[in-house]
Image (tube, rainbow, N blue to C red; front, side):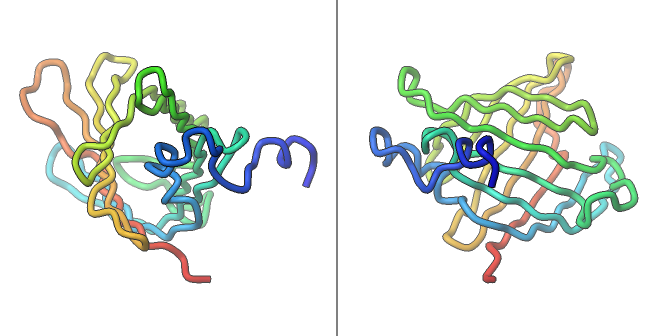
Length: 173
């Protein structure tokens, strides 16, 4: 492992905020996923993917990589497009929440959100470049699975629209 990778990765959470860091830290590991993209016209497309979470930055943050569809480079995934992106989730004790940045350079999609627990779920909220509200939620969380919902609320809409639905299972290998 080169110096960059060695210095980026961490073995576990930083002890200063260890309890708060477990909000996303519980996902550290490798996951297989079934992704369903939902079109505004009611169409649906499903593909297999993978997600990998790890501790970074002295254990003060959680970073992940989402690859959809698997294998990377597969034919374009209808509606949502192919994902090969990363999220950096950093706990900010000054607001008792997580600052979240998603980067998908292949699709030129970049998002900023704030994440917090909401009951048993985790809800991340932000806006798109066009000013639409975004809500990404982790629900039905167990030690071996989670359900992730990607929703958008256009400025002229009163309801949230489900765009992507991900069911993830922890790899056993």
